[in-house]
Amino acid sequence: MTLRVLVAKVGLDGHDRGVNVITRLLRDAGMEVIYTGLFQSPETIARTAVDEDVDIVGLSILSGAHLTLAPLVITAMRELGSEAPVVVGGIIPGEDLDALRHAGVAATFGPGTSLDDIVATLERLQTTAQH
Image (cartoon, rainbow, N blue to C red; front, top):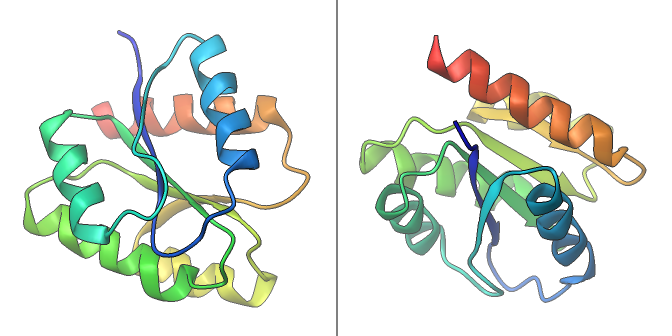
């Protein structure tokens, strides 16, 4: 089964170089990638996750608003019935990792995370979610 991943830029974060690299990496790894583009609301991301029946949602956040935006996306997704794991990549201070996990973020990827680690984590999350 091909892993379907929604990759999204939430909020006012306009930095898209990294997310463009990630979308190509995931595609080249054999995943089906749906990219929402810039400046998406949590509700739009949640609706797209449900409409596209994705296995995983990846948020790219470089604005520093990860503690606000990631939980809003997760809440909106759960309200629409999606249990897809949510991962977050970007500039995430170590002291924020526990709060993100507590909010339901399944994994985080900071600067320097290897592309192989990202792919392996998403594949593990898909396997875990199926059981």
